[in-house]
Length: 386
Ligand SMILES: *Cc1c(COP(=O)(O)O)cnc(C)c1O
Image (cartoon, rainbow, N blue to C red):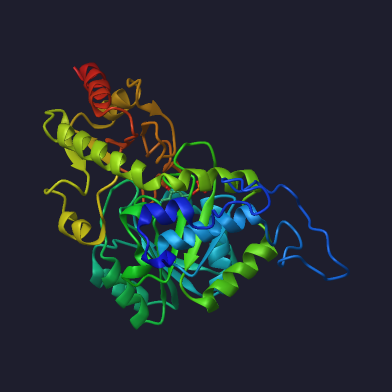
C-alpha cells in the first residue's frame, strides 16, 4: 500500500519513522552527530556529510511533514520565523512585494516590515476576506507573495484559499499559507492550490509546549531546491533533539486536534450565552461570517477561540488574570489550555499600527483537558467581572 493512499493518522505515525535496521529499535534513534565519516575523500554514506546540511532525525521529521501536508518536500527550521525568513530570502529579491493579511501574526509582520523592509522587500497589509482589495493590492505592486493565515491570529478570520490562489497565480505570484492554526489535520492548503505552506511547529505540530520550531512545505521541485539551498546556506535548522520532539508530537496530531476542536466548540458555545460577552470569534459557530467557508476547506474548527468583552479592556484583563486551568502565557496549540491578551502579549509588536488587536479581546487556546473543567475555570474568572 503506497503511503499516499494511507489515512492521515497512519501517515503521522509511520512516515519517515521506519524502525532502525540494525537493532530493530521501533523508534528511530536520535542522531546527535554534527559530522559523518567519509569512506575516502568525498565518499559519503547515503549523502551524509555535515549536520547543518543533513541529519537523519531532521530528515525523518521533514519526510513526516511532507507526507501530512501532501507536499513533495519539507524543510524544518529552528523557529517559525526562521522558516519564514528563509522562505522570503529564498524566493524574493529586492523590489519584490508581499501582500499579507491585515491581521497577520505580529511577528510575521515585524519580520517582513521591520527587518526585510530594509532589504528592499515591500509589503501591503489588506483584509484577505475582501478579494477585490487583495486583487488591487497585488496588481499595484511587483507582487511575489500573497501571504495568508486562515484562521487568522487572533481575529479568527477565514479566507478562501482556492480564490486567493487564483488571484495570486493570475498575477504571476505565489500563494503562501501560514497553516499554524489549522495544522495539516484540519486543512491542507497545497491541495487547495497554495504554493507554499509555512508553520510554526512550536504550536499544534509539536503540541506539548516543549519545543520551538518551524517548517516550510512545497509541492514543486524548483521551489524546493531554492528553499533547501537557503536552509543549508543560512543554517537556521532545527537541532536533532528539537526535530525528535517535533516528530513525537506530530505522531498524535490527529487525536489531539479532534479533542482541541471538541473543546473549542464547547467553550465557544458557552461563551456565546454569557451576558458579559460582546462577540465570540470561532469559525465553528454558525454566526461566524466564515463558517460555511470553514466547513468547506477545514475538517473541523480547531481549539482557538477569541472573545471580546462588553466591559472593554478592563474586563478582558480581569478574565485573563483570573483563570487557573487556563495559564496566562503566550503561544498556543499545546495540550494545556493557555490564555493570551494579544494587544499586550503576542501582538504587542503591532500596537499602534493598522494590525493592532482590539483591547477588549482575549484569545483562548483550548487544550485537551476535560471541557467541564475549562468551562468551570472561565465561569469562576467571570465572577470577578461584577
Ligand atoms: C507563533 C507563530 C509564528 C511564529 O513562529 P515561532 O515558532 O514563534 O517563530 C508564525 N505564525 C503564526 C500563526 C504563529 O502563531
